[in-house]
Amino acid sequence: MKEIPGPPTEAQIEDGRLLFAGECEFFFGSQKIDQLPPIGRPEVAFAGRSNVGKSSLINALTGRRALARASSEPGRTKQLNFFNLADRVSLVDMPGYGFAKAAKSVKEDWQDMMFAYLRGRTTLERVILLLDARIELKESDKDVMELLNRAAVVFQIVLTKCDQVRPKALATKIAEVEALALKHAAAYPRIISTSSETGFGIEDLRAEIARFAAPLQTSGEGQSGS
Image (cartoon, rainbow, N blue to C red):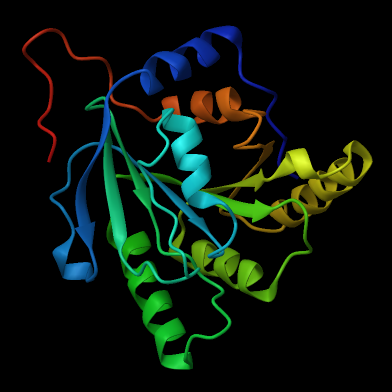
């Protein structure tokens, strides 16, 4: 059985703070798998249902109100959005899944594109899989876990909107998703609970992402924004 890692150290939390204190800007959007930006910085991708609060979490992590924009119609954004964080790591906002009104062909197109990205992106270090702490797991969530497993990409479950859940219910939810993660070879076993509204868990997730960032460059040796 996988051993569940402990929380980040103070030094790791400081690494995360320093990383996310850097500039972060959008630099590429791709609607087709053959239109991805060139391989460069390490990448950490964010996946989740179309109403899970993905944009809000990315904005909370980066300290920017509108870096990642939430669509007024969940599931409408259908492209991979790339953000350059401090020239050390790229944050990738994946299209939301689980949109109930979408045609079967649209869902299949989403799965095909995401699988191609996941399998073929050598710089992809981890996928952050967001689950709403307030509601039960959906079949689409489990399907995406299987997709990540087949793609052999390490993913980590992060619970969102935890400020809206009572402590006892949150503990139950964490135990449930921990047990589910242990059943997937590609799942990183540590669950992180977050709230974009209160900032709960944000420094923890920053520290986790900072583990994959490229080393700090000395003056004059930084990478370009592309």
